[in-house]
Length: 327
Image (cartoon, rainbow, N blue to C red; front, side, top):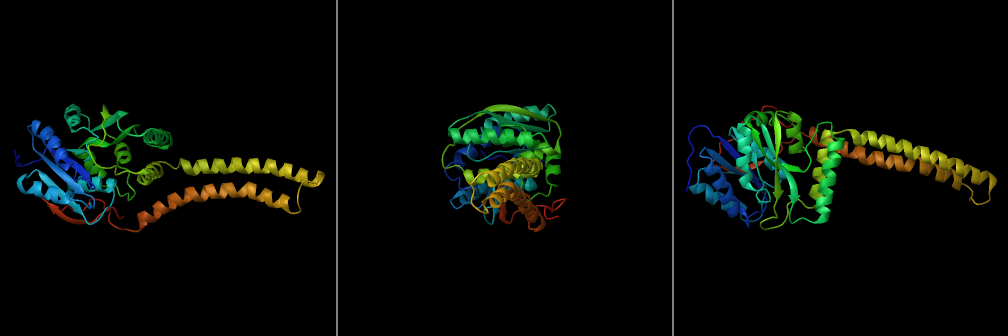
């Protein structure tokens, strides 16, 4: 049954997708049922992040006979966090829900999120207590990342939480003014504050298809999270350099002893190995960490838009952001 929308939209659901043709029909069916059960107005905003399969065509077909279905079609793949950001730019609901298209996050949990929102919470985020269908390596690295981020970040960021959440309109309006290019949305949501609460759930396996977050993208997301919300890696690098230099100095004394009182050293070896031990480790560590921060500074100064929209369906052109990302 096609729902109709008049006047103000109560709920906007943002669904980023990248090559999800195998799951879109079931994703649409389950999310549609959840929102229809609320008895309130809603919109489903699918963000096509440069898919190379039939994802775009499927959503275009839905939008022809269901006016709750909206499409934002990127000119190419800009990444999951940028797709979420574009969805927030276009969303008009009083409450905005972010959920991935792969159905690992159960749409039925949205009912609980709405109930908490109506109790007065401005952010309701889903917290995983179990992850089904994932390798021990994925579970270990994900758990380690969240705990390292919590320890390093100046802003408390809840552990074991993804981007599946409901946000009040006032929260979304604040997020739209944040200019970062290397975005870590769940961290930004924590940074803006407001009244937040978790709802726990067990994460399911993917319904079909392959993960859109392989190791390379997970590493990129992890670096974005840590460098966006903490300068502690720079401090740790300084401490590590000091320890390496101290250890190198102690070994220097040993090398000098060997050079003066034994015949076990080759000519010139003592000074060379001492300098290498003292400086090389420190310099390489510092260069790597500084490079991460400098690279992000470079990205922020280029002034490019976060994304380019090729076309939209069912949506008016987005208004210029209150604080453009390029400044």
